[in-house]
Length: 212
Image (cartoon, rainbow, N blue to C red; front, side, top):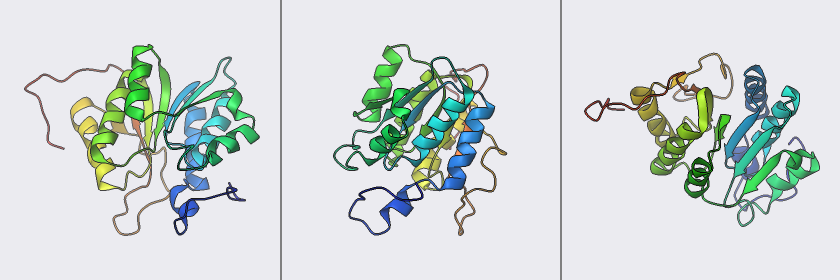
């Protein structure tokens, strides 16, 4: 990550803009190690910095059968496979699987397959409706008490999608998890947050709705 990828998209400062900073990656790695995560879902691979952190955590935990499912329909066409090649160079493809499908399709299939995981890292589309759908399916995959980490929480669209689940389904920000990491200078909103799912998931009543 310090050396940079062999190729980048044709946008100014794309690698620095898109890539999760090292300090945030380290915090996510430490959080996953603390919770002894063995199975992690990742939405969005791009240049691969967060995937390296997740892979490092899974190796450090020492699970017998670690699992890292990465969903990125644009890894080949948009990112020239640089993120996946980085994981391969670190031999982390031994525990990872890349799914080249839109997250709405890939996550719904994981639900059908009965897949469960301890945690997820979400950094795919930032459109409100697509973030909302990612979180909808992930709540059916992540175990009770598990954690969903959202990148770019400082985007209003991402934050609004998360607020529904916070207000209506009992998800809670783990305040200490990513404290002191990257924040927006204007709003002081963190770039990434960790959301803990309830130990006892529930469906709200039809007539129960809290504006978000």
